[in-house]
Amino acid sequence: MLSQLRNVAKFPSSVNTLFVNCMHPKHSHTDGFLYTCFCYVNSHLFSKSCLCSVEPDNLTDVLEFLLLGFSDDPERQPLTFSLFLSMYVVTMLGNLLIILAVSSDSHLHTPMYVFLSILSMADIGFTSTTVPKVILDIQTHNRVISHAGSLIQLSFFYLFGCLDSAPLDSVLLTVMAYDRFVAICYPLYYPVIMNPRLCRLLILVSFLISLLDSQLQCLIVSQLTFCTNVEIPHFFCDPPQLLKLSCNDTSTNEIFMYFIGGIFAGIPVSGILFSYTRILSSVLRVVSTGGKYKALSTCGSHLSVVCLFYGTGLGVYLGSTVSHSPRKDAVASVMYAVVAPMLNPFIYSLRNRDIKRALQRLLNRTA
Image (cartoon, rainbow, N blue to C red; front, top):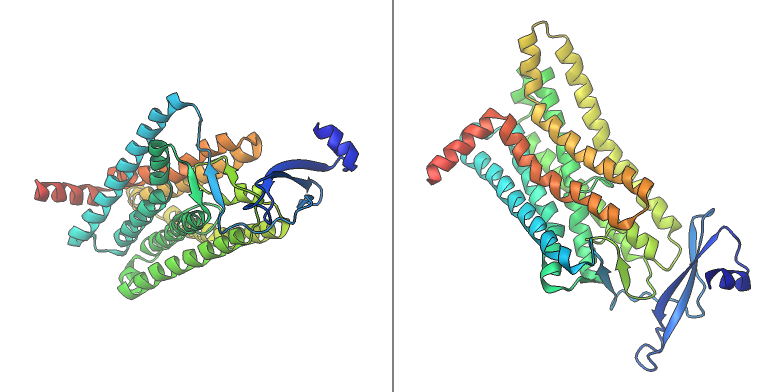
């Protein structure tokens, strides 16, 4: 039928035709008839237009999104529920222990561990943005999220952490890389440079940059127009999926989104690469092997978290470009949205003697 309609409408071969059920906005409360919206996407121009006789109004006031999640099989729902619940509990407990250990031990009131505690807070917020919604949806068998709820989720998701932008996690990792750079390359000036005032300023700037980026992303999504309730093949409101499902031309939105992502993601990555390049050059000038090991061991945990954070995000991005399967993309997104924040406390606690001693003292005090 699609080929017949394409021939009747005389669409060019480069055009992909989409049929979206939509309710006539002028008769949605009177006749109740279901109309069909004909949308086409020009693969060469990367533009999309709506060809229905009805002008698609922005129905964001009453619009609801249906999160399809991972699987519709009822037999898999208990396994998915148990998996997400256990990962969320482990993430919360691990990061809370890091925060309590740093705050309760005066020996850890240094810039590196203060930044680590802020990173743990960001991981808690990042995970809490999506995982509780997944658990609740499975338990209540209701995967609907309102338009306002999607914007709130999107705002906090980009604020706390997503590789496509400059989230709080990414900026904090850059700040922590700068801290290690000063500690290794300028050890005598470290207390002077990394003073409490500068640390507070770096944390404030990190939060403001992330807040700006999240609000810009929400502004892009809020301008989208949808013909009807939208099914999202993901476990959260993923902006690229919303752009694909939008009924209006999204070429400008996509350019603007990638432009923002390039700027906000490029700066943190450049800062991390610069810091570790200078660290490596300083370590290579050390004569003794013990000195080299001691210098590298101070940034080993941070480097592991950086590789985990960017490695999982890059793997998801490359996997989505190859597979073109939204469900597989959703499964892969679990790696950086859930698994990475869960593993961060283990990386720091297992590789850092100070954290292990602080945790031991904390547990002995509570026992």
